[in-house]
Image (cartoon, rainbow, N blue to C red; front, side, top):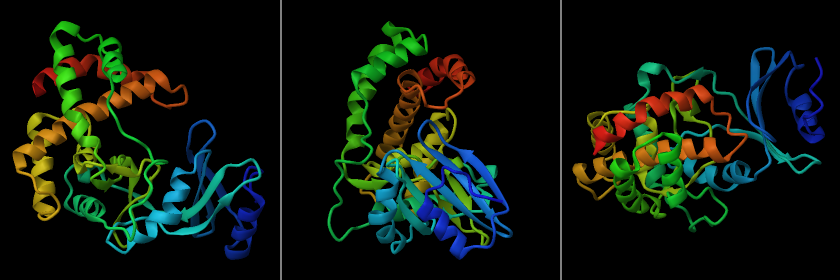
Length: 292
């Protein structure tokens, strides 16, 4: 079996020289200008990632080696480089199993890995100007009110208050994943969990990561539980009371959800199903009211 033509020649050479003959090639995902594939060589496999942006490639080159030494589980890099058309390519360790659904949420091992990430120290502060920059502005609030058919008189002022409070989340205090959703975790053959999507690596509040692993539209109680479990597993990471951190996680969850909706409205290649937005339109007004 031959490699597809989009695989750059240097990467094709590396794979040919270091692996048995290619037996299967599967597309795993990706949006416009990017892609993720699994190259299978008999009983061995490698994940190939292509991106038009250098964020994840730079992460694996400059940040990942430091984080691995501090207990953050990240896939191994076998090859990285650029194709002739200027795209960034990675050949990564294939993580064979997804994170089981029963471990979605405040799983102790996941929280420990995230805590290691949040406590990580670097020889020199990385340049964050080129990283993903989280934020909540007036346009995001207005889009939420419009897209979700929310009552501006009732929920508009609440969202504005939360928008103001959320600015604390975006201070560059800790290294964070900013996208540790359960679909971005896998299990190695030894059962160890690995976070394998790092394009949004940045700096901000650990509450953002804790909010993201608390899936769906969780209750105030569930968000409080995730905050409590994080502090229990990582007792020396934050100098915050449980109540203060739980409030941050709640506001972070609202922001994460509004950002998701904003991406749907502003990025044509977002890959978000219309059915998901329909579900959010139906459920979010009541959910937001329950958090007030």
